[in-house]
Amino acid sequence: MEVSTGNVGATRVLRVRGRLDHSQAKDFEAALAPHLLPCTPTGSPLVLDFSGVVYVSSVGLRVLLLAAKQVKTQQGRIAIAALTPIVTEVFQVSHFNMVLSVFPDVAAAAAELGP
Amino acid sequence: MKLICWGTRGSIPVSLTAPDVRAKIVRALQGAVAVDLADPTAIDAYVAGLGFDVAGTFGGHSSCLQIETGSAEHIVLDLGTGVRALGQQMLTRFGPQAPQTYHVFLSHLHWDHIMGLPFFTPVYIPGNRIVVHTCHPHAEFALRRQQDEPSFPVRFEQFSAQFEFHVATPGAPFEVDGTRVVAHAQRHSGDSYGWRFERAGKCLVYSTDSEHRLEDEDERAGFIAFFDQADVVVFDAMYSLADAISVKADWGHSSNIVGVELCQAARVKRLVMFHHEPAYSDSQIAQILDETRRFEQITRDGHELEVLSAYDGLELSL
Image (cartoon, rainbow over all chains, first blue to last red):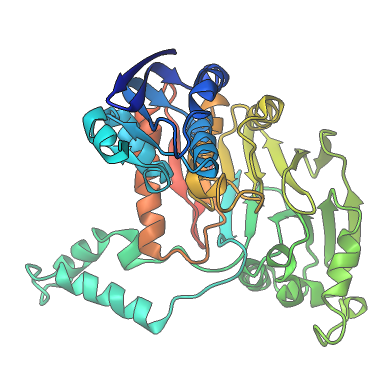
C-alpha cells in the first residue's frame, strides 16, 4: 500500500495504491490520519483517489468509515473517487456506496467539494 | 451429517402477508406470457425456472436448526419458533410411545432463541429426555421463567419430559453421542456462543448472534481457528457491512462480507447465511445472496467457497 499527495485547486488529493486488506489497514489508517485533521470548514477538503486501489477488505472499509466520521465531526468534507470496477462492486455489496461520498473521478469530486 | 433448517429469521418471527403473496403471483404471471398454460409440462418447467424468491419463501420462523448424525439421539440448535414444526415431525416419525433424547444447544437466551420451547411437543411426552447444553449458567432460569404466569399457562414443572442442563465451558471440547462438540465465546449482548460439531470426518459450525470487531486481530484469529476447514458454517449475516459497523454497531450481529472473509481465511467449504433481518423481503434476501456470491467470486484466492442463504426447510447433506 502506498500513499502520495497532491492538490486540485484548494482540494487536497490523497492517491492510494495497492490492497487495503487486513495486513495493510493499520498502515493506511496511520497514513490517512494527518490528512484528516485539516478537513475543517476553513481547511482543505480531502479527496481519496482510489484509482490505484485493487482491493478493499472489511477492515479497510472500516478505516474509510472512521475517516468519514471524523471529518463529519470536524464539519469538513471528504470524498472517494475513481473506484476500480472490483472496488466498486465491493462498495455496492457492503453498502458503503450509501454511506460514503463516491465520485467517478477526482475532478468531479474536487468540483463538488471545492469552494 | 445433515443440516435441517427449521427457523432462519433473526430477532423476531415474521410471516408473508397477503400483499406479499399477491406480489409473487403477479411477478410469476408477468413472466408467463409466452408459456403455454394449457400444457402442464410447460407450466412445471416454467415454475421450476422461477427464482426462489418468487416461487418460494425464505420463511419467517426464528432460529432453530437440526443436525442429523445417523444416531438415535437428536441434535437441535436453539429453540426459536422453528422448533414447533421440528417437534411435530418428530411426533409423526416416532409417535408418542417411543422415548427420544434431544440434545439442545443454545447460542444464548434471548427470546427469539428460546420462545419455541412451550410449543415443542416432545416436552409434553413422558419418557423423552431433553439435555440442554449451554454456556450460560442462567439457562435453566430463563427457560423456566418464560413458562411462568402471566406469560404462559403451562409451567415448566408441568413438562413431562425429563430435563437436564449441562453448562459447558467455551474452548473445552466434549462428546455428545459420538459427536465432538466445542463452544466459542461471541460478542453479543449478554454473550452468545457458537458451537462446532465434528463427527465421522465432517464438521458443522453454528455461529449466530455474533458481532465481529474488525480491528480486533485476536478475535479474528480465534474465529478463523473455530471455523477451520469446516464443511458448513452457519453465520449471522443479518446486516450489510456498512450498517453493522455504523448505525447498527453494538447491536450484536454481523454481515455477509465478514462471513465470506472469515470463511475464506478458514478454508470453509460452504457458508450458510443465517438470521435474516426480519424487515427483509424474499426479494431482498435473494439479492443479498446474489451479491454475496459475486463478492466471493471477486475475492476468491484459490479457494472456492459455496455461499447459500438459509431458509426454513433447507436440508443440506455434508
